[in-house]
Image 1: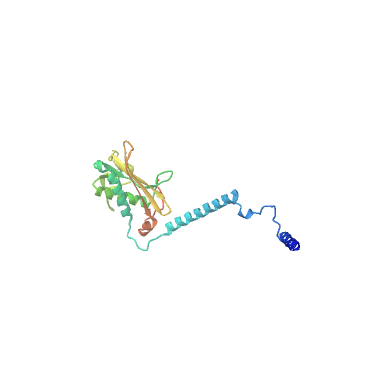
Image 2: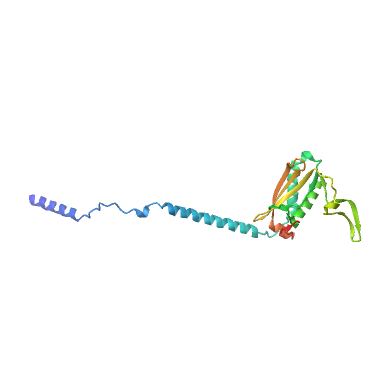
Length: 221
C-alpha cells in the first residue's frame, strides 16, 4: 500500500515539473496602445484637406451645371426681386424713383457691364408696372432733332436737368459666385440715405449664357 502511494506522489510531482513556467513579465500590449497625439493631428489635417477638395469639386460642378432644358430668363429673376422691393414699399407708393446701373462690388463701385445695364432697364419696367413713379433722369428737357433721328435721352451731364427730380434711387451690386451672379438691389432715400427696401437673387450662369448676356466687366470712366 505504501509503495502504491509513493508511486502516485512521484507521478504527481513529475507532472508539475512538466507544466510550462509562467513568465513574470507582463505581456506586450503595444499593439493595443492608443494612437499618439501626433497621429491624431495628422488624421484631422487629412480630413480637412479632403473636405476642401470636396468643396472645390462642388463649386466646379455648380459652375459646369447646365440643365438639359429650361425656360428661365433674367426678367424672371428681376420680377421676383421687384416683388420683394414692392412688398416693403407699399406704404410709400408716391415715390419718385431713379434707377441706376448695377455695378460690380469692387473698390471703385463704378465697374459696369451689359448685365448691370439690363438689370437697371428691367427694374424700371417692373417698378412702373407695379404703379410706382419711376424717374428717367437721362431724359433731356428738349428733343434733339438730327438727320439720323430724334433723340430725347442723353448721358451728357451738361444736357440733363440740374434740378433734383427724384426722391429715391434704386441701385445694386453684382457679386460673382461659383454658381452664378449674386444681385443685391436696394432703394435709398436720397435725403436721409436710409435703405427703405432691399432684395437679393442669384442668377445662374446658364441663364446668362442662354440669353448671351455678357457679365464681363467694363470700366466706367
